[in-house]
Length: 217
Ligand code: E4P
Image (cartoon, rainbow, N blue to C red):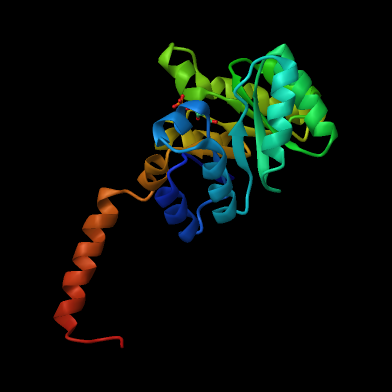
């Protein structure tokens, strides 16, 4: 399973990349607004750090402007995935850009029917938002299961990119189901390291090693 970082924070991206944990990056207009940085230079900087796909989202909602924005974003670097919303116009843009060999991430997916349309439009990635569904007492993970099953039935190549990840169980459940990618806030990826028995066990090993009076080096 691939790990994408759902952030535009350069320090966090470099950190995860240095740990060998980073397969790509996703951004959205809210993440860009939070960064306080200029969109285009920020995306270019991220694309130089990360070799995997970097999702950059269009801002317009009409076809004509979205396609121009998508083409501009696609020209920034070879590893750009243009992110478009799951609307009729967004799927038309998806089809046009995909036909030209551009990676497209279709975002704001909340049903398996929407995911089916995105696959038929040639999306490279479909982004179902599990956390936002959970917030409404609808199971985000049931949606992931549905989409993975439907895509398998027909051999669609669109990768299921689990988005709106809020906790480590979202990652584990995605892995159990066989989703292709999870995009997570870096803090959630780091939470996978944690277990109190790991800390307790390591403390005991360190103490016992001291008792031997030995040194490996
Ligand atoms: C990523 O592609 C999505 O935009 C993001 O995961 C949304 O997460 P949120 O629901 O926490 O805003």
